[in-house]
Length: 236
Image 1 (cartoon, rainbow, N blue to C red):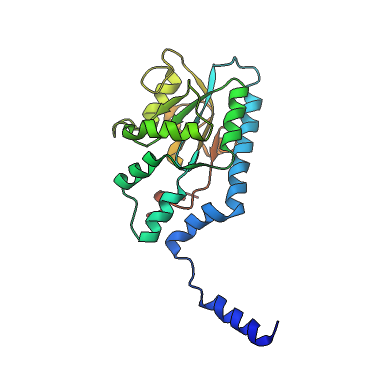
Image 2 (cartoon, one colour):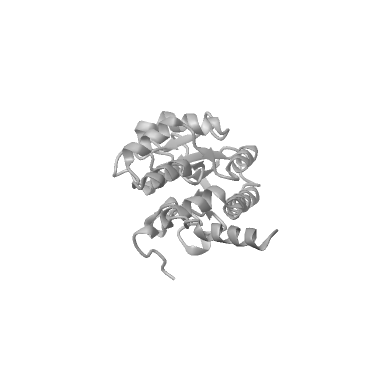
């Protein structure tokens, strides 16, 4: 290639505007092989843990709990649209996105859920999506092949019904989030925000401490949103 052509190419590259900071995290989750590999890695580790710890448990006596957004369903299309227009998250527009039922699966989740079912486990989805979008959420989960007829979907139908409240219902076998009358042992929690996991004050076995991660708690990366965007959340 002539020197002039090389120079022109270099100038062209330099003239390209950088990806806006707000969209960098979205691009990482949509386009990078690193993100996809990390997500599959998390789900493989979770699958190995569940398979090992469920060996002597009766089918139906245990479950895994998954968050939905950025844990099961990939909503980066919604985030990309908002970034393109320079507008922030807004619940009305997000509910409209959910009603489109177009979210793709997060890498690794389909195989993980299938493995849990083969091992005799139940699936509970504890999400902060609202009850208004529950039917659309079910349809989207079914379209990617992860929803079973006996699964529990536990939306946030009031501010008081936090994820901690719904986890307690599930474990005790009482309340809207439970398999009625059936206390359940949860072998794994999978999420993308720290609020997806039980705190120490919930007294759920093998959770509530940092060393639970990689054993019973499995955290997926999320570079698009979270409490870390507005304050320092790192403790050490």
